[in-house]
Length: 165
Image (cartoon, rainbow, N blue to C red):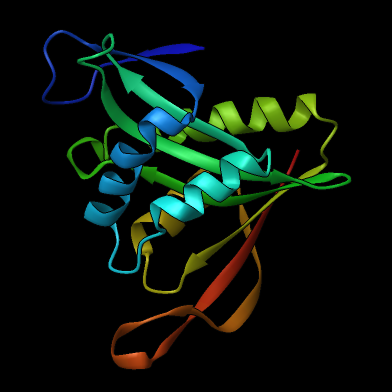
């Protein structure tokens, strides 16, 4: 799958491809993860997800070996639902529409799997992500208290959101 968007500061428009996450990309994925979050997944978390057969996709621009990692997502299929475990846009590409592109790709895949719902959790403090999900059509359906690790041994609540397919 490829998508062409024209981010505000890119001339000409950036063309991106969606491809399966592979072991050769895990270091780059972990690097983006660490640059985007205070409490990132480890390379091991991504490796375990790939080995478990989760739907792990990357959005890249350009051709190897010079390809750039724009973002990625990891989703787990259930009986009639898909749970989005991680979706990340590299900081240099944030707020340019790439999160929406990846949600579109995930939605198409989930429908093809026969899923009826998409589920996710988002940190209470992650206002930008919550706004993206709400604009996409996700609705808040619950709260998981003390779900995420936070600073100084504290915990942060997660908002549970769902999207009807």
